[in-house]
Amino acid sequence: MSRFFPQAQTIKLNADVELSIFQCQDTVFQLSSIAPGACFELHQHPESQLGMILSGCLEININGSKTMLETLQEFYIAGANIPHGAVNHSPEMAVGLDVKRITNSLAPGNIDEIIFKLSPNKDESTGFPCRSAVGYWCETVITQIPAGGKIPNHQSAIEQIGLVLNGQLIMTVGEEQQQLQDGEIYYAPTNVVHGGYNPTKEEATLIKVLILPYSELAA
Ligand SMILES: [Fe+2]
Image (cartoon, rainbow, N blue to C red; front, side, top):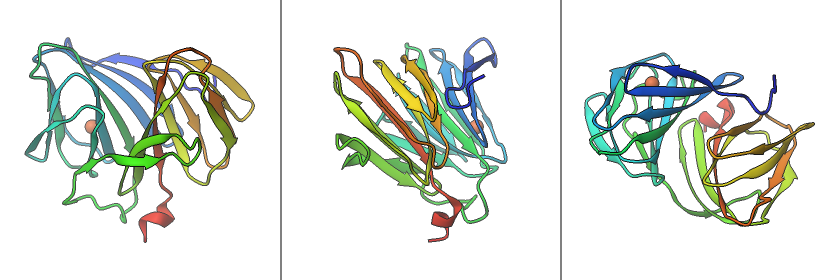
């Protein structure tokens, strides 16, 4: 089993909600497909959760506060043991991305700011334009990797998980290499060299979630 290219475990929660779950050491990265008109019931867990809508339209409910989340424009964070759920009011299937992780007490469990809007930025590793936002224990970066575009080999003190959407990337992490399709991920732990390129003639979207080290939470 690959350490850096985890395979999804698929779980059908009920007739309307299906989860693809990737385990990345201490972090769970999950894609949820929610059928039209269906509800991902309110629930809570000890992990803090980052969530984003990848396609379709979802209304999220965090501790009673309801928001229509804009697709690929913003993410939410539900703190530890904070009830959260989602409803798909639209006639199309909705797909959400969730990242769950136990955070220490410096990442507040009862937080005021729950929505984080992405804003234009420059991706440090590629130099390509991106959109990004930082929220408590994580940063999300969305970059379009052009046809033939390269992600130079680099390493970082911040662990990251990358999801490919709408395209393909060949990624190398440590000694492993894999061609990632739409909906597949790589996991680059702290200080593991990683890089890649887009081998196709089409642009690919890369969504990176950076897990900020606890030391940064103290700042
Ligand atoms: Fe959850």
